[in-house]
Amino acid sequence: MKTSGLVFVFLVSTVIQVVFSLKCTPPTEAILWDPNPEKLVHSVVWGYHNTTFTPCDSGDDCNTTDDSFPVQLHPVEMQHGSVLRFIPSIHEGLPFTMKSVMVDEEGFLTCNASRTQQVTVFESNETIDIDARLLTPGTHYFIEASDGHSLFECSLGLRIKVVVKPSTCGSEGQDVTCGGQGLCATFQDEPNYKCLCCGNYEGAGCEKFNPCLSNPCGRRGQCEQDDEDPEKFSCECSLEYYGTTCQHKRENLCDVIKCQNNGTCVGNSTHFLCECPDGLSGSHCEVDLNDCSPMPCENGACVDERGGYQCHCEPGYYGDTCSNQRLGCSLNPCKHGGYCEDLTSDPKKFQFKCHCLPGWSGKDCSNK
Ligand SMILES: *[C@@H]1O[C@H](CO)[C@@H](O)[C@H](O)[C@H]1NC(C)=O
Ligand SMILES: *[C@@H]1O[C@H](CO)[C@@H](O)[C@H](O)[C@H]1NC(C)=O
Ligand SMILES: *[C@@H]1O[C@H](CO)[C@@H](O)[C@H](O)[C@H]1NC(C)=O
Ligand SMILES: *[C@@H]1O[C@H](CO)[C@@H](O)[C@H](O)[C@H]1NC(C)=O
Ligand SMILES: *[C@@H]1O[C@H](CO)[C@@H](O)[C@H](O)[C@H]1NC(C)=O
Ligand SMILES: *[C@@H]1O[C@H](CO)[C@@H](O)[C@H](O)[C@H]1NC(C)=O
View (spheres, rainbow, N blue to C red):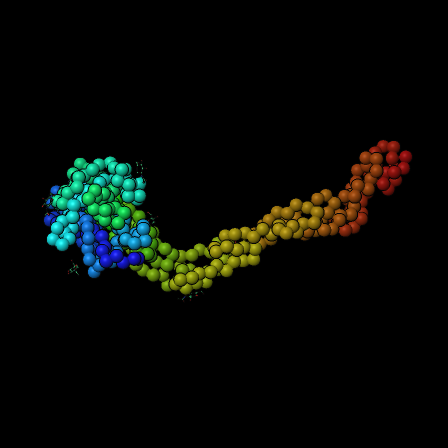
């Protein structure tokens, strides 16, 4: 950054007065809704300062658009209804004159004062409060466009983005205590004020009681609010814990694990293992391995069974895997429609008798 000896800055000071009591302590970053916004003043000092003051030290975002002057683009956030006050800085005893212009976003980014929506004042050396009617909820942009001072311009850093934040607390939007169960507040970078609820309350107006919000089951289980009595809850404990708030730790997970299909559980307080019989797998031995893959039956259909398989052989085959060819009648030895009778139940033996149709004879009915 080029040091010019002069640095243009604006200062923002926020006065917060909170005069209602709370049931719980808000986070320190919370900015509470002020019930008297007309007394809440956001002062912006426009002008010169000496180089001992560096605006970017404030922790706010800084931006440098022309490589020489730090520009604050970080918005001033103000409560809807509060006062935005522009103060010309005093240089060598005299206040600068300035012309504050309300522009659109592009006018803000490009320092184009012709993109004016509203002119707040003409050239003036007086402190002004921006007309409250201009400060509707949302984002507004102001730049300085001095006629008299060529230095005193937006392009040298004199611009400000203002976010006016409305309240969504309570049905009227201004219930500062949120039904007595919370407080109306906002945080930096949030678009509006809303209810921060105390304890076990939640909802837009902190109207809902939820016993699970205080996390009674801890990380040991899942809290469920009772459907019938919203004051009550139950804990769905993870495997390692039991008890109404999952407060007890199990000594052995096998106390609750049921291995299926005669699997045997081996475990301790954090781990378990089901040792499964052959043909089964899965964490609880619930998975029956497919014994038909790869296909064991050579000439037949396979039916998977627990820890095994069964082959249903095609005609003419036998054996556990249908790999043996059956002898006897299965080979259709009887010709010309003769009926074949197996003479043995032993499939390996070639013993059969042909009963021939009339007109045929012979061992295989082939003789006329
Ligand atoms: C710079 O500004 C600070 C704060 O306004 C003031 O205390 C200090 O005397 C100034 N220094 C010079 C050299 O003007
Ligand atoms: C600075 O401003 C430029 C142009 O407006 C923008 O693109 C950039 O993201 C800004 N940088 C930071 C850090 O805000
Ligand atoms: C400023 O804005 C006006 C109105 O939109 C436009 O006509 C003009 O060209 C702009 N000037 C610059 C320098 O961008
Ligand atoms: C402000 O400007 C007016 C009109 O130009 C002038 O009369 C007055 O003295 C100025 N006020 C201060 C404090 O310089
Ligand atoms: C478990 O084993 C018993 C005895 O060995 C047996 O009778 C029973 O059928 C088996 N149960 C299962 C599901 O395998
Ligand atoms: C429980 O068993 C697991 C697996 O065998 C082991 O890694 C772990 O250290 C054991 N935990 C305790 C508390 O004994």
